[in-house]
Amino acid sequence: MSKHTAARHFADRRRRRLTVSIGALIMVALALSYVFAPTDVGALPPRPTPAITPTHTPTPTHTLPRTPKPTPPLLRLSHIRLLVTPAQEGLWSVVEWQGADGAWHVVEGWQGTVDAGAKRWAVYERNFGEGPFRWVIYDSPTGRVKGVSAPFTLPGNEGEELIVRIELSRD
Image 1 (cartoon, one colour):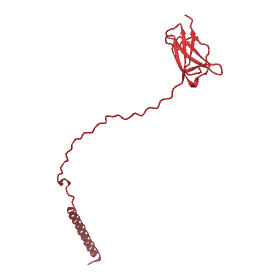
Image 2 (image 1 turned 45 degrees about the vertical axis):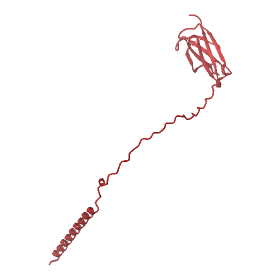
Image 3 (image 1 turned 30 degrees about the vertical axis):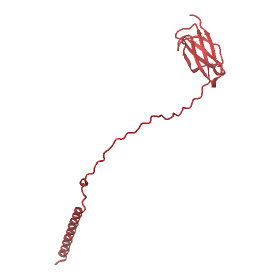
Image 4 (image 1 turned 180 degrees about the horizontal axis):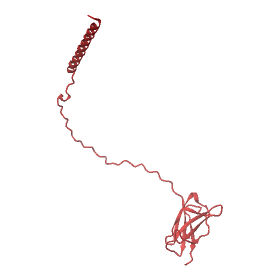
């Protein structure tokens, strides 16, 4: 036998052994998978369902005491009131404050219609005694000036009301 033929014969033998070994491993794996196959869970015996008996749960008839809300601090207020004569429909009032430079500035929030010849604004304690202020009356919110009050100082104590009168000319 030649060297070449012997090598081929040896390789063929080796291939056959490898094929047989792989085949044997597959057979062993199949046999083990059959032996250790999972059992069907649905095959468990049935269990009885317990009967549910309704029970009465009493509702409490008493109420728990409420926690009182804290009382807000009382506001210490005074007021300024404008009285316009004669009373006219559509008048607009503005309160102004005078700056150190002598110019008058609108007080934000103290503007509005004059109802039945009167207007009233609250003054907070922090502003008691401040001044000078004045009322300006217009014939409409964007109209012309109809009257101006004399300068005044805000009330200095709680509960006081300062009344400012403006007499309008009859047009």
